[in-house]
Image 1 (cartoon, rainbow, N blue to C red):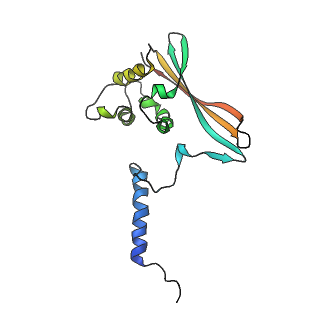
Image 2 (tube, rainbow, N blue to C red):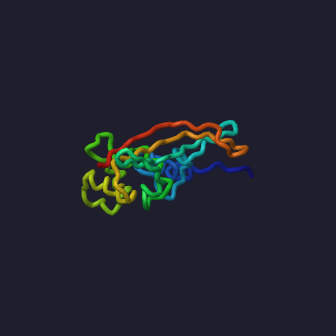
Image 3 (spheres, rainbow, N blue to C red):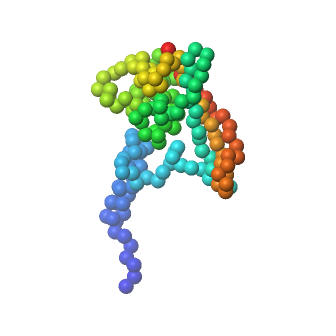
Length: 167
């Protein structure tokens, strides 16, 4: 008695189980719990004993003075693994300085989802988290290459920097 091939019904069922979450992720949002392999900012790229990662630095400006703050302070109450995506999408501000990106505004302030709020409220959220007068924020992204063998930084270079006016 040999090995019997899977039935057509089993194949169709398996395809639905795998294709439906893929389409959801492609067009909407990734279902939870996910069965899709990790991708995007959560992956660590290893190439020839070198790990490539991003490092973020946040500077707060008041008049001419700048102070470095932790991202956990700026994004109070938001899990750390969301930071790269929020930074990539201009911390909730749209490219037009007179508006905001509603998806990230609601991610940062989910209790506000029922009502449409103004850009000034998003600015107030950041100023409240920093706990000091703020004119602008600058977020720098560094590309860091680290040796797998000894953990030392091989190379660190500025990848991008964005400035956001909060006055």
